[in-house]
Image (cartoon, rainbow, N blue to C red; front, side, top):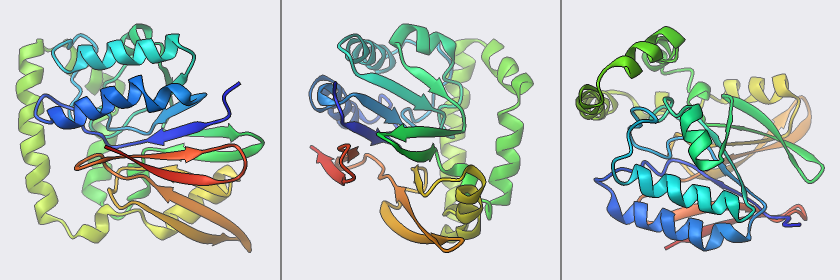
Length: 242
């Protein structure tokens, strides 16, 4: 039985990022094979527009994930803000297990909470309002009912608009709110929290009601890839994937 558990986030894979896609496919065929579990904490894709989109690199990614699962590594995925339209069709094709916005996982006797991280950014009120709107089932059904070509054009427009919106915002409001972090740890009764989204990799030592806690923020895959590894003996290791 493999004891190792891996965590990755914010790869933002797309046809426009071929180097990152190649790095991820190599990771699935190599490093990830030695793990018992792989958790993908959202934004695997830069703009996922539906399970029926099998254009490159989506089809290559699905095939590689399927192979990894078939070879014995359990893969879990939770939605990011860029790929919340990943659905049951994707899971059937790949064998990946879809999790909710928050999930408590067992790390060999120790509980940890995983999430994408956007729900912790409570100071970004406009984003949180938009998130509620687009995550509604009716909005998603309406979006997925549109022809694939229309969704492709919408995704391009969204990426452009998102870039403009970020440029206008104070960078601090796009980070996790410290009080939201504490309240979330308290609500779920855990002392370990892992998330991505903010692109600010770090390990934060916290105190929750007099007890120590840790928040692990995963890195974006940009110039290099990064994976957080839990070896099963209480040690965390951050690895660079070239």
